[in-house]
Image (cartoon, rainbow, N blue to C red; front, side, top):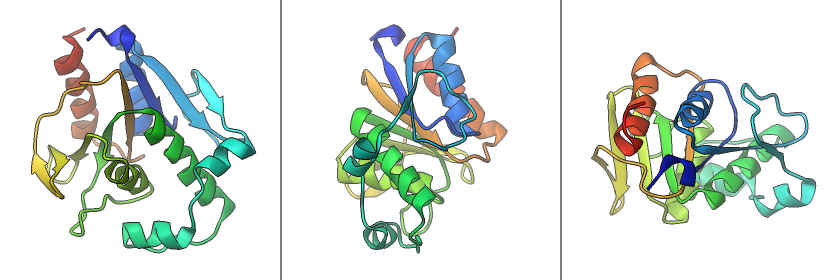
Length: 183
């Protein structure tokens, strides 16, 4: 598989998503950023601003989202729109890569956790680099197992924490190098 045949989907936010985008650009990977009116992006190449009707396709009740992620999300327009945009990322990208923290309940900390839960729900190949454990984990048979993933599909998602560690950044760079060869 050639890097220029691939497309990365992300949300253009500071931290992991921006580094996924910057690294994709270095490797010639196509990049699509999903956003909505009024959303402040850190990276804005090839941005798709979702319309109201497109956002509605990814709508979910905050009660269901809260239950799936074992935390409480309050009904705010911004959080709802963020979750709706994440739906479009995961719906378009076949393989999902996330930088964050895996919690004891097998969810992932923060809003990034929604991409993880959707990937599980959509049965997507799912990989999380846990910054606390400094390693990659793949969701397989209902559990996280240590792994060294590669980009194996032409469409994939890159998401994660805004608080990217040096190890998290290195994990993204190594993922692209192992998948497409060193630049």
